[in-house]
Length: 423
Image (cartoon, rainbow, N blue to C red; front, side):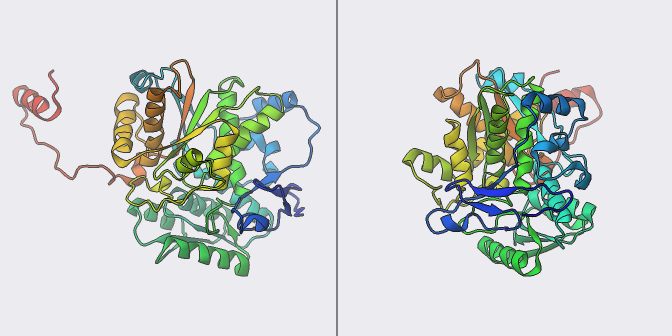
């Protein structure tokens, strides 16, 4: 076991078979399950004699932020590399909620994190662990939020960061990554990224923050612990009540699985009496097909063409599928048109301009409300993973802004013609 001063004595356990490994092994999932069905690992902590009520009092006395829950994270606060992540708002969305038949709809707005996404939680834990355990750098495969977050936190820690990406990805993301000093290189295929990721992790000793397995299993299991705190914050904001459902945009399911573990831990501590149903909002339907077909592992879809880049994974992971089944949840595949409609709806009705992947959650909620899976009395939380400024080109018109003459008559005509608005 790693026993660095700040790093807790933890082990890693396979989500599928229960095999255990030391925390120093950055396995690309469980070696014993590699041939039968790849599975990620998750962290198992030493027993803690403190009661749930004691932890609840400790957490309540601390300032908001992810690390207020340090007792359920892999490091003590003294070793944390932080930019002020966590403590994001849980907002009521009554306007769009009533429109889709869910008047108690809420969003967990992760776009207010330091690099404007939920991946800051993963990056803070992962980079902190790398620093505490003597890793000499950070490597990951990313074309989006994880890369930007890793670059920022690596800069904060004084560690080099290598991001392996694809040839085509949003210019804003590239700008963010390079602004933080990351080394950004593209490979010919997405799978080539994973190959290089594994090689750098094993030969150079750098911490591999993202997935490096093929088929995928998910991100580094210790870093992924950061996502649990989303569940902790939702429960605390609701006075330790639990929503009826949480809908999460999903690629490899790190956040989905982390949220399920978070609510599960709260239940074990006696702070909640149940877990919410979890729903995966997908671009291609890997989990939806696996759920419908009773498959043991997610189904490869061969999907292409989604504009929701952060959720555009042709094949999801066992950890995501297990989280859905453990909570009696489900999965919904959402196309580009529905996603764009959801993005516009949240912006116009609630003042929330979200990334397109996050908008998948609203489309999924609307469909599930129509199908009866979600009821009008349900409290439903959508995870807003990031903001729409990350890729302004998606769904935007290239037409010029209409020009108006400086008279009220011409202004009125222009408003009626272009916006169907009558003053």
